[in-house]
Structures are given as structure tokens and as C-alpha cells.
Amino acid sequence: MNPMRTLLIALMMTLATQVGADTKKYGKKECNDISAVIDFLLSTTPNLWVDLEKNPDDNKKALELS
Image (cartoon, rainbow, N blue to C red; front, side, top):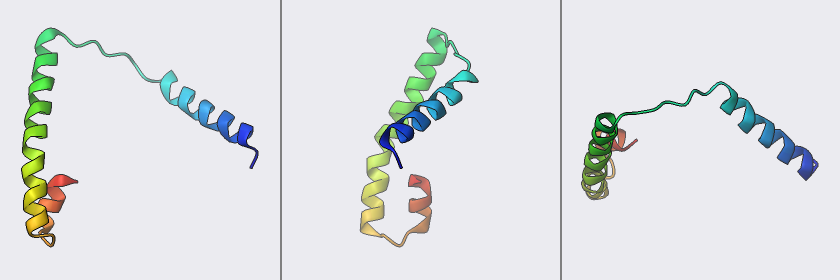
């Protein structure tokens, strides 16, 4: 396939997904709440990976990480 055609298709697909997207504005409280949740998830993820490395057949841990 022609590289320019591939690039054009990729660009069109990207623009098409952005056309229907609304811009959401969050207040300070919502931003702080979202940030707190992200911080919590980032702090617990390494422990889940360590547990999964110890027992790679643990489907429950694998599901939590997915």
C-alpha cells in the first residue's frame, strides 16, 4: 500500500474520532479527586506485579492487573 495513502487514512481516522468528542472541563475538586485515585492506583500496582511474579498462575491477580 502507498505510504501516503496509509498516512492519509490514519490522519482521517484520527480527525474523525475528534469531531464527535466533547471537551470536558473539570473543577478543582474533581481534578483533586481524580488525581487521588490515580495516585492510589499507581501506588498499589507495583505490589500486585510483585505478587503476580511470585505466583504467575494466580488468575485473580492477573485479572486485577488487566
